[in-house]
Length: 277
Image (tube, rainbow, N blue to C red; front, side, top):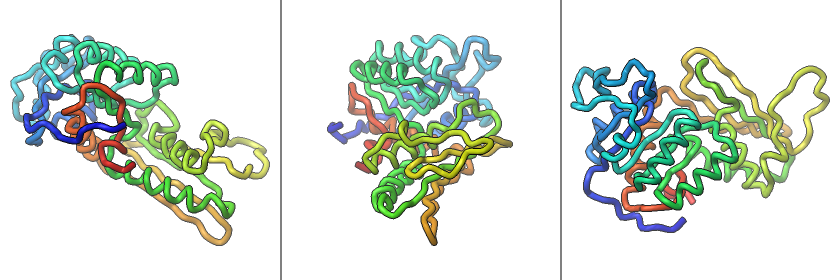
């Protein structure tokens, strides 16, 4: 999508959804340390024990704000919302943001096809960056995978995607792993839905040519590891990205906020933000 790249010099007023969660804390810390953004509002569910508390109390320095549950009241104070919550919550927030013309950076994963269609419809009313992974490094990895998939399409390379996350993650494979599969399939002129193998158990028979296999690991506090294996005859290539903290997701999100500063409508992704197209 073509658009102006001139960004506002005025700091962007940012609202954070899921403010008391692990990712919420990382986003709030990144915003407070940013010269381009200011924390305008912090949202959480009405039943959260954090409602009414200072969103930056965990850092030992008050922000002067209170975590609130009224989405419309919170977003009315913001230029942009960063949302790393659950699909149902994100869709509710997005409806209000679109009504108010507030930009949205979506880091939530696990959306249904119907919800993705709704996100595209909301993008006709406000500007949205929607990406399965907001990390700058992960998106550069997507580009490397695109290049490798094209170069290795001829030669009988089997493709396997292995991802590992913490024990609290509720969707599998991860949105990032699925995006990796989509990038590879598209680079080879195919569709992931026609090639993906998500489960192997019992007597599976030989591996079918041209499939893309997925393996999922869940445990401990693993932030996010992804490896794509291109296994050929006599050699194999591994392209990996490993996250040691959520800081990369937060920093990428703030770059996305800056990208939306001069955009009123439209759906974008991190390839647009990072000029990787």
